[in-house]
Amino acid sequence: MNVLKLAQSAKAAARALALASTKDKNRALVAMARELRRAKSAILRANALEVRAAKAAGHATAFVDRLFLDAGRLEKIARAVEKVAELPDPVGEITDFTARPNGLDIKKMRVPLGVIAIIYESRPGVTADAAALCLKSGNAALLRGGREAIKTNSVIAAALAKGLKSAGLPPGAVGFVSDPDRAAVKELLSLDRLIDLVIPRGGPELTVMVRRESLIPVLSHDKGLCHTYVDAAADLRMAEAICFNAKAERPGVCNAMETMLVHKSVAARFLPAVAKRFESAGVELRGCPRTRKILPGIKAAVAADWDEEYLDFILSIKVVDSFEEAVDHIARHGSGLAEAIVTKDEKAAARFLREVDAGAVYRNASTRFTDGGEFGLGAEMGISTQKLHARGPVALEGLTCQKFVVKGSGQIRDSRN
Image: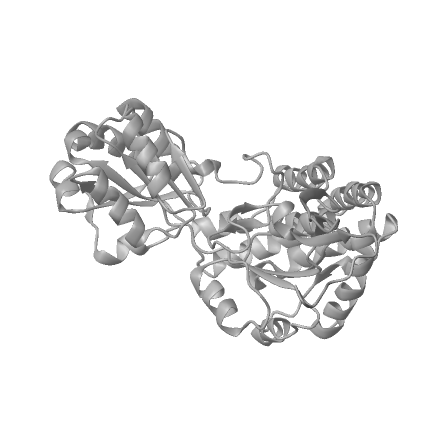
């Protein structure tokens, strides 16, 4: 099916989904998870072919890790779909607004956005997460994954659509654009009469292209250039554990730390121990001149390193003179996804949480927690680095909007007022 027909089918399905009961949507989600498990052999077979192709093409280890599925990862994907069924349904939620002197009773109702197009790179789990979140929030999903995972995603999308159909909901509610040509994305971005929101999930090039070419409102999942600042008053053993987790636990994800900032007063004590731990895990360190005086064997960081989302076992380190220098560095180079401070100083912590501009700010915890599941939101659509209309992990509520519901008893407006 071509892009236009997929979008038309999604538009028709969105009207049905907006009226679907929570019970119907939850039944469909359980059926979708069941079909994913039934399609396990086909999904893993397709994925194995694409993983081999990615390795042969010389893609980075982190890229291959994002692409790779095994039985355990697929089961986690299926469970995540089931967990969405357990989440509260935001659709139809009524909130008080005001009662006017003329007797009008004005409230707000949470409603679906309509058709959401998600354009993402080679991360097959996104296919199921996005479809599940869109369904629970009453939206139709139009999915376009990266060409390196086209076979895997096609099998996953077919299983999801089969689950929808078995539960009595329109299979067009989950459409997958299998055309790998970039022209398909351009056509998708032109269908502003059929699609209500576009969410790009990938690197900066993808996000910039979508923003530039889309006629449809865009909710960006931009790069994750995250920092951890080890303050003068940090507990250094705690800082070591937090920084190691933020970088090395899974470096190929957007909430991993890319730059570590260390106050000059603790650098000589902190850096040798944490560097030894990083190097034992295979992390390549790149440092500013003051860092290299303490760690003379590491590479020199160049200006471009401070703006690089490595998504790999690479870390930039900068020694700073003050809290203010650390915050200024984050303001210049951060992407607004997640930032952390490690400190025992209450005033420094309060300033950091107030002054640093990001979707999530942390005191004494790893940026790796920036995730819908870890925040108790369930599966996430992505992590928005913009400020309208959602910011941080985007889950069910971020895929809805509100409309005013006004109840009267015959009131008419007097044009003289």
